Amino acid sequence: MKRHLNHITFTRLTATLALAVGLSAIAAPSMAANKPSSSHAKAAAPVAASGPLPANAVARVNNVFITQEQVDAMLKATNTPDTPQTRTAIKNQLIARELFRQAAEKQHYDTRAQVIEAVEQARSLAMTQAYLRDQVRPTPVTDADVKARYDAIVATLGDKEYKPSVIAVKDEATAKDVLAQLKKGTDFAQLAKQYSQGPAAAQGGAMNWVSFKTPIQPGATQGWPQPVAEAMVKLPQGGLTTAPVQVGDAFWIVKMDQERVTQVPDFDTTRAALRQQLEQVALQKATAQVVVDLMKNASIQQQ
Image (tube, rainbow, N blue to C red):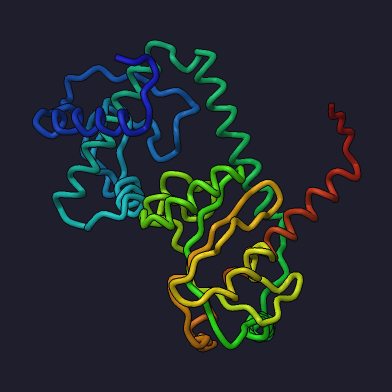
């Protein structure tokens, strides 16, 4: 068995042990109680090792309660149906994990270097996330912002929209070889999967619909390289570029799968997606500003 268990392996192990737990009385009063460390989670606080379970507890493992809140939290996290069978399975998994924890603590695994490092990393991450939640304050996105973004996008659309497939390779010789194979009738998608280092290669190079105002203007190509956009709008439906289109160190081959009159999406159908995009941009800007402010008072040395 590998020394370090990944999350999937750990989950399988706990599920296996949970089954065993479900078939045995693990919380018998005759069991000796092991006192948990003070660092143990609040949800499993030390209590008396005998007596009836309180209303919020579903099990006791030696002297540690498994609470209903823990079961509810795992049920929500796993997004599984809320059934008695599911709750029993989750309870047994929590019992198994608590058994693991107690056994590891008893053998002083909490003092091992790798455990201490993992705890410190988790603490650092939680602290950083809490700090960012308090300090990063994105500018709120208004309805007017969303509508302005929609209008700006619509203004960039041309009369036609295009659905191309592309193959992008790193050298001209390969591009010419691919073109030669295409002219002999080799399937475009097959060659894209075999040769392309460009977008959507795994999908045979097939791209989404895109529209440009013509003639093509710099910066108005919806993120496409301008030479490719210029070649694209000149192709008839079903057409193929006769020579590779060079973009920097790459060479592109474009096939025009379909073209049609531009279908302008309704504002109401795009509102939510546009708001999400703008909120993400606002979050990135606010985060960058926090970094800039911190750097002003920091001493940073780099190579």
